Length: 325
Image 1 (cartoon, rainbow, N blue to C red):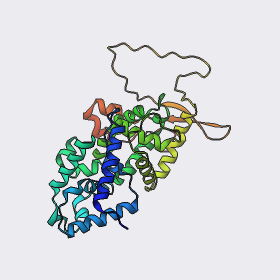
Image 2: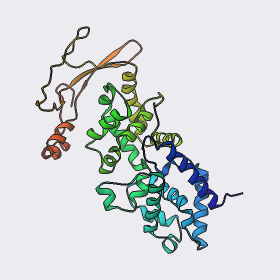
Image 3: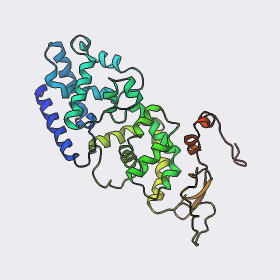
Image 4: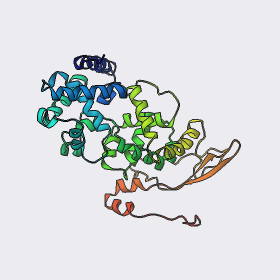
């Protein structure tokens, strides 16, 4: 027997209240995507909501169910139009519901459960759809971009001395300058992005409280691996990161194996190093063999320090002599 909408509302209220209580100490925000519902349950809810519209009933009593329903459209958002898809699959919404009403329900979610609040220029420009898309954490259309970003930064990820969520998130946020503006907005949530990346690249258990409900995190990981090319990008990135986590250290140019080399002291008033020197690293290529790899930096630090050079660097590609182009 189908569960009535008021029971779904009550179930979601209890679920998010418990998540909010568990996360109150850390202060981490909630996302509506953390609803914990299965595909069949979401399909059942969708049918009930559409029937509710056809019956011309008051919609506000199931506001939380509508928030979850709208967030699922945000998760499937591919960077085109949100509303045409929502209204096509939700007949009578334009007659019985309003976009502003949906925004108020998301605001209520944010106030009631300490939910995430959209911010930045993109959120100001798209003040309504920013809510369901932000609460979708990592929409499908961003998943391939994230995998490609990890692939581009794989050498630097492998060289992190402390591959914590904070360190990984900060690395991505400060170096993904070629990413789309929407992905950069996501990467500004460094702790959250770092947790997702660690889950993607490592089998080790994450320490401390996760900023994402575990079933939701697993959903993100599984869906991302299904994106075209993403699986190969992640596979290659994992190779480097796995070596680092197993203790394989990078050997920098100018470092002598078996001897101690001290880094020169940097004065407080010295300029910040750009980090554009090539580096030599070792990568395991077999059970008893290693391969030497030259790491060529991306010059992202130059682009950040000198914005006037950003356009030039984005359209310029370097060639390595003797590498066959």
